[in-house]
Length: 205
Image (cartoon, rainbow, N blue to C red; front, side, top):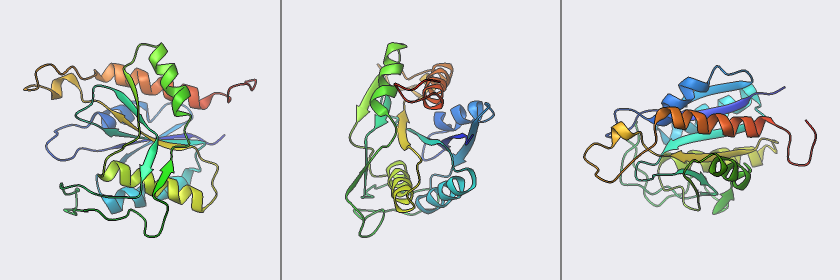
């Protein structure tokens, strides 16, 4: 059976760690799971993810990114065909108000069962949000490019982006912020993978 693919972005900007990378490192050796760390680079992240799809043909693909300003595990519903961020990526590239893919649709939707996954995590006590704006940086760019690639090649691979909050230890100097401990993030993503590994609702195991 094809594996589940869990990919997370590495460290970037002012953050000494990225919890997305740490979670993937913990989970990458689970049975039936393939893990990968993606560079925070518009071009290299897209190229790396395309190579992962080609190599593994996964049954589903989940990308984790850091949303430093969030307190929630945030399921992104929409990938927007628009790169727009003042900050440079790891290669020094700045993209302002330009398409991720020329001539492609303005929006592509997640093909993960985001509502079902969110309900599963909420029932387990995790802080959950469903978002319609994945930002204008590399996370959204990769989300859009990956969804576009999957559609272009007519691949039956559910794929989506999930933003996760920072770790508590990343929030010194941010009074009132809580973050989410690494063990909790690990548990949440394990639940997501278990849900994706099971049969669709209404089907027998």
